[in-house]
Amino acid sequence: MNQKSKLAIVSLVLGICSFIQLLGIEKAVLAIVFGNLALKEINQAQLTGKKNAYAGIILGSIYILVVVVMIFIKGPYLVSFLARR
Image (cartoon, rainbow, N blue to C red; front, side, top):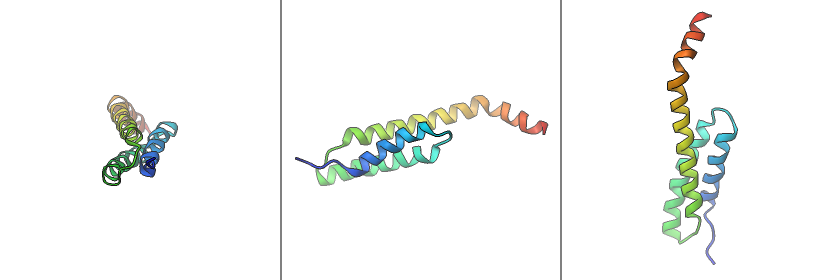
C-alpha cells in the first residue's frame, strides 16, 4: 500500500485554516505552494494524496479570490473611513 504525501496533507490543512482566521492570506499562499510541491512529490515517488493536494490548492485559491474581491468592494469605504480621522 502506498504512503500518503505529507505535503498534500499540510496543503489541505492550511487551505482549511486560511478560512478560519481573518486575513489568513499567508496560509492560503502556503497551501497553494505546498499543494504544488505535493503534486510533484506524488508523481515522482508514487505516493497517494492527489485529492488532498488539489483540495489545498483550490481552497487557497478561493480564499485569495475572496480577499481580492472584498478589497475591491470594501476598499473605497475603508479609504474614506481612514481619511476622516
